[in-house]
Length: 358
Image (tube, rainbow, N blue to C red; front, top):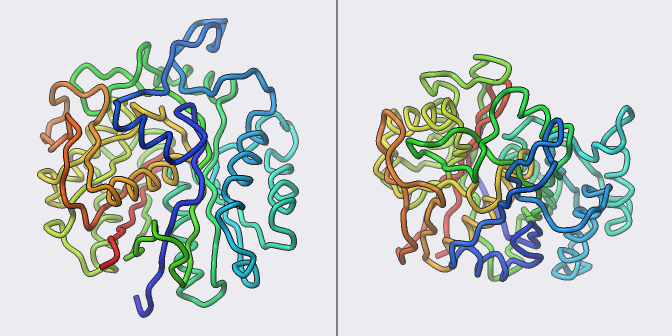
C-alpha cells in the first residue's frame, strides 16, 4: 500500500456489555454471553443464544441506535467533511419482511450523520471483514478520507429456524475446534470501527492489507480442502508483504460446526499458520453472522492493545485433522501483528492483517 490506513474502534454492544471496557472485563474473566433461551427455537424448543436482555421486537434498530450514539460521542465534527458509512449485516432488520430489510438502516444512520453516503454489504458471514477491506480500498483510492464500518446483526426466528433446519445449531454453548463440538450458537451485537487516512485515537492500529475469495463449493458447505480460505490468506500475505512467521495471533472464524472448523484447520496448515496462537471468539459472542468480522476485529485490536491472548471458550481437546495452537488460557504476549479470517455460506472467505503502530 502506498499510504497508511488506520483503523480504530468506536463502540461495541452485545450481551457482554454496552462498552468496550465491559467487553474487555468479560474476556478477561472468561464470561460468555451465551445462555439457554426458553422457547426460542422451532416449535418452541429451547436453544442456547447470545441474546441481549429485553423483549424488543425491533432488536436491529435498537442495537444500531445504541451503538451509533456511543460511536458519535468519540468522533469530532471535523471528521465529517468527506466520510461514508458501510454497514455489514446478513439480514438487516428482519422485522421489515416481506419488504426491504435494510429500509430503516439509512434513515437511522442519517439521524447521526446527515447526508453521508451509506453502503450495505450483505455477503453472509464474511460481510464484516469484507466491509473493512472495502473501506480501506476506498481510502487508498482517495474516494473518502474516513469511513465508519458498522457490523450488526440481531437474533431472529427467521435466522434461528433456518440454522435449525440445517441441523447446524448446538444443544449447548458452542465449542470451536473441540472434538465434541456439534454445532454453532447464534448471537447478536453491533460493533463500529473507523477506517481513516489519519490516526484519530490512541486505539488506532495500521491496516496492512486484506482480500476475499470464493471457492464456489456449496450453498452452505465450505470446501473440504480449505481452498477458498487459503487463496484469501495467500493474497492478503502478498498484498501486505507479511508471511506466516510475522503473525503473532490469528482470530479465526471458528463456528464450531464440524465442516467449518475442519476446513479452517486444513487451510491454516496449508498456509503454515497452524503453530500461531489462535482462537475463535464465538464462545463469547455466539455467531453474530454479518457482525462477526467487525466485533472480532475490535476484540483483536484490544488483544493487541493490551498484549493479551484470550482463550477459546469451549475448547478442550483437538477435534480437527490438523492440530492448531488453540489458546486455552489467558496469557500475556507481545502482539504486534494479527490475522483476522472469516468464512461463510456460498463459499465466501476473507482475511485482513492489522499491525500495531510503532
